Length: 596
Image 1 (cartoon, rainbow, N blue to C red):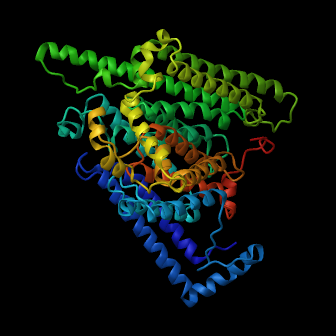
Image 2: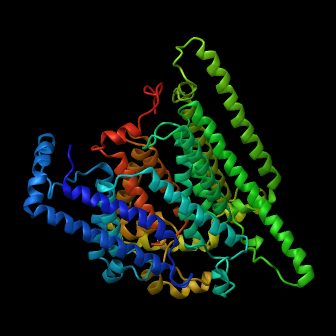
C-alpha cells in the first residue's frame, strides 16, 4: 500500500529527530551540574515542539492543497476498503491496546490538573522536577509521532548504544576519581561531591539512564545471529556487531556498579531474571545468556579490582606527598553492587571463569550434537539450523517457577525482619531488610509521608490524584518543618515512580500508565511483529521501570524512556511493514516452527 505524502515527510522528520535526540540529549549540558535539570528539560520540550510544529504544518499543507488531495486519494480509497475509515491528509491513526491505556492516563492527568488544589503548579510542575501536565503533553505528542511515523533502523540503535558507551565511560572515570572535565571539583560542597556524575547529573538519574542502555545492549547482543533483526547482514558484520554489543553491555554493567545508587540492583536483577524468557528459545540463546552472565560477573570483578588498585595507589602517593591523586568515592558510599565487587572480588573472578566455561561447554555440546544429527538429516542441514531449533517452553516454565519461589522467599524475609522474628539474623542487614523512617536514605519517611496524604484524600481524589508534580507543594505547605526536624531534608519527589503516579494521577491514572507500559513492552518483546529493536527498547523500558521504584522521575531521563517506549510500540504494531523490512526480519531455515 502506497504511503501518503504527509506520512513520508513526517517519517523523515521523526527519523532526523531520533538521530539528533539520542546523541544530544544524554551529552548536552550548559553549565556543568548547576543547571543540568533545566538544560535537559528545555532541550526536550523545545526540540519536541519544533517536531510537532513541523509535523502539523506538513499535515495541513498536504490536506489543503490540490496535489496533496489527489496524491492521497488513491491510497485512502484502497485503505478505506479494509477499514472503512479515511484519514486527514492521508493519515489514519488507529488505537491499539497500549494507546488506550495511555489515553486514559493522559485524560486523567488533564482532569486532575483542572480540579487540582494547585492547578498552576500541576500544569508547570515547577515545585517538583518539571513533570507537570505541560511536560506530559509533549511526552504524549512524542509518543504519537514516533510510534506512528518512525521506522527503526539498526544503525540508529547502534548510534544510541555508542552514545551509551561514552556515557558509561564518563561515569566510570568519575567514580574512579579522574574527573576529566573538572565538573565534580566545581561542586565544592562535600555533601554533594559524589552525588553527581557524567552528563546526567544525579546518580539516581544516571542509573536509570544506564538501565535503558543496559537493557537494550543485552537484547541486541542476544539477538545478533538469531535471525530476528531488522536488517540482513553478513556473518562478518554480525560478528563485529555482536562484539560491539557485548562491549557496550559490559561498560553499562560497570557503570551501573560504580554509580553508587542501589536502584541499579533492581534494574540489573530484573534484566538477568527476565532475559531467559526471551533467550531460552533455542540452544544459542542459552549459551548467549551464559555469556551475558559472564560479562556481568566480569564487570563486578574488574570494578572491584580497579577500585582496590586505585585506592592502594592513592595511599602510596599520600605517604610521599600528603595528597591523593585520584578523588575516589569513599567506601562508605559504595552501593550494594560495588560492595560485592570489592569484598567478594575473588568470588566474582571465579564466577566469571565458571560462566565462561559453561558457555564454552554449551558450544561444544552443540557441535557434537549437530554432528550426530547431521548424519540422519539432509546435506542442507546446517549448524545454524541445529542451534536455532526450539527447546520448547519447559526451560522457561522452570525458570519462572524458580523466580516465583525466590520472590516468595524475599517477601517472607522482609516480613520476618519487620515483625521482629530472628533479630539476631537481621541485625547486620537492618538497613536493607527493616523498614524505618531512615530506610533507603530516608525514603521510608518520604514514602510514609506520601501515603498519609493519599489515605486522607476523598474518594474522587484517590481515583484521579492531586495533580501532576504537586507532591512538592503538599510537603512544603504541610510538613516543611517536620521534614527538616526528622531527616534534615525537604522532598519535592517521593523517590518512587509508582507512588509518584499514585499521588499525582490517582488509582485510575496509575493503572493507565502501567497498563500501557506492560502491554507495550510485552508486545514489543514477544508479539508477532516484534523484532530485535522492539525487544531491545522493551527491555530498556522494563529495566528503567524497575530502577524507578526507588528513584526520581525527571526530565533528565524520562524523555529517553518515552522515546524507547514509542519505538517499541511502533515496531511491534507496524501493520504496514514493507517487504524490505519483512525480508530483514526473516528467520533462517529451520526456525519457522519455533515456538516463542
